Image (cartoon, rainbow, N blue to C red; front, side):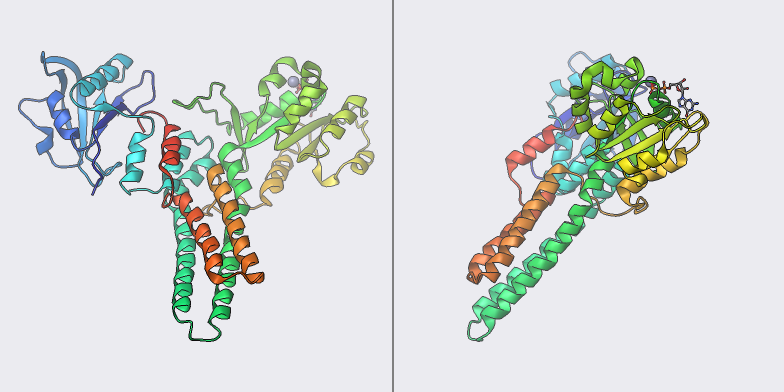
Length: 462
Ligand code: GDP
Ligand code: ZN
């Protein structure tokens, strides 16, 4: 049963012109409101079977003037996105027509939906849990196939199921502890109970830690690996960039409804999404170091998860090369020993003394040599060759990661409490805290404020 709410409406298609535009209405009065503005003879939408689509017109009921010719989909609760009655009016796409239809619907009893309010209702009505709602947002924003896949898996409830199982485990233990406490006549009950708590705390903690280990990968899959291509002028940075972008893997997304105003460039290298930093800089001025100065380029470097430092092996190492080698020492980096088709002037053995030999990749970008190896190294660096686990559960959401860390702390308190001989009922409190924290991920124990804040990040109409 849906919780009672007023009826909301919004444009659910991206802003701008398109083939069709959709005005979505959700709530108890969705059909009634739609019937006020829908006309096809004496046909009433409310009388039609659920999950059907109907041709007709939207009119201004006061004057009976037509607003647009439409197709209307009706979906009656409970099998809908929000678990409420939903009406979707497909209009003729133009900005004017879709806005006019929305306006008409609002004038006839619906309220304009807040960003994410449809999804929020799906959550509040119990159709999806919070991690799934967050996954909806991730699907909308997904920039790479992998990120999309990960979000869809989460939407499926992979993470939710795992968390639910862990919570159930903790709950069973807490119940067992209660039982033990109720039968204090057994002498060894205190010790048994302590044993039980510490074992469970350690066991679940291990599982949470394993989940957290996926987090850095999850974040990378979600946001892309921030990658900087650097090197002095003419070593081949632009050529490398173009090669990476060209192999029809480039995924450039302009995400409607988000606040991002720069379109970033993403490429997928053996399944690892790279977010290329400052590609404009490479293209326009040819030399990031010269252009923005060493200090600022150091800052750009500090934001990078991966640095591709390009050297021209047909010339000896210059002081500028040395500087860049030094500046990137602490980073994840690959050193591209480029232009191997030309005569060698840069001593490879000397270079191997200075840097990790494994980080060197020999390439000739113009003749397309060594590029496979480069891609393999990138994948290896970040996934230890492990990109194939399609249905693994990844945590990628910052909020989830923070909660998992707090959960581990709670388990540590349980373990420490037992080890220092704290009374069982106090230890129980920490165990319950771990249970609560995990519940915040799925939204089973979560504050209203957080929910409001989370859903406000959604785009309108979702
Ligand atoms: P950037 O200044 O670092 O961006 O370098 P560019 O990518 O613009 O390349 C400078 C010049 O080197 C261009 O003429 C490229 O065609 C050339 N170049 C790039 N990679 C190679 C390579 O592997 N071999 C040879 N022979 N020339 C290359
Ligand atoms: Zn260039």
